[in-house]
Amino acid sequence: MVKIPLFSMPMCKKYSASRFSLAYVTTLIGTAITIIVPLILSLSSSQQLKIQLKTYHEQPDIRFSYKTIVNLQAKDVNGKPNELFYSNIQQLNALRPSESFRAASVRALEVDNDRDGLNERIELIFEFPMENELVFQVQAAVFLSYKLNNRAKIHTDGLAYIQYSSGLPGSEYVSRGDVVLHQNQPMVVGDKVSEFYPTQQIMDEIGTSMSSIESEPPNIANILKRRFSMASSHDMMVDYTERFSSWKRCISCEENFTSSPKTFILSVTLDVPVLQQIVYVPTLGQTLLEIWVSYLALLTVAIFLMRRILFFIFSNQLFSSHVTIDKIS
Image (cartoon, rainbow, N blue to C red; front, side, top):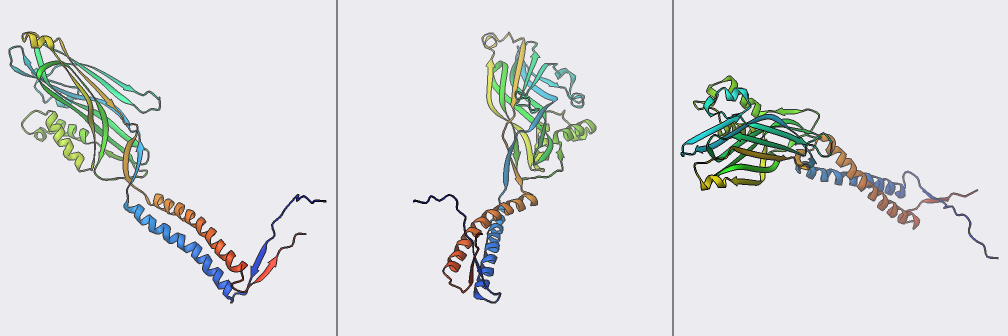
């Protein structure tokens, strides 16, 4: 009758030797190699990891600070230059001539499509009433609040600068682009929040010291110049990169220079990058974690190879040892 195997159980071979035998020394050397070699390899790879910078992606928390400056370069129907200025910053308006101020209708919308508490874009529309004036140039500065809350914790402000000029009069300018973080140096990650508000510092200087603006009234140009110098000292800056722009010509004004549009509209859309790349220096904990993961991976391979080597040595009795086979009762 043919017998059918129903159950199997492996038998264990044990190789034993005295502490002063060559087989025992070989086992100790093999164990030491299994532990030390992966450790050396993982530490050597970590030296390269320390030199290289790390990156991760995060959607920043960007909010409209409800502070804007708009400057329109215009001419009246007789060709006389006229500067129109708008700002909702009180300390700035106090230092500007009142005759150049032009009140504007401002509409702001923060769009959060996925309802995660982070804006995907900010839409702004400025509408200026015109009094027999033709606009040839527009400058605008939009103040923003910028926060990173993941690994690098940064609270700062940003400034979106929009500028366009044309030889032909216009009735509307549309601008769309991204609010981008520029880094000259990697950030340091940790639990401490780093706060840096260059634009607010400039506004405080303008409001408290007449000497800080020299002899001329404050305008967008000197605010930008001072902000760039302050931001460069901190190796980071949040600004605006324009991707699309459109200047709507005033056709009726070109045909008849004695007429002018009733309003001038400035439309700005600020897109928030969903995957803003952040460059940072890894912490000691992150470096040790990478070393540990690398060590475990190398240790697994080393254990497998060393067991195969020791199996070959003892199964072929290259070094004398006593073999014991466990019996199954």
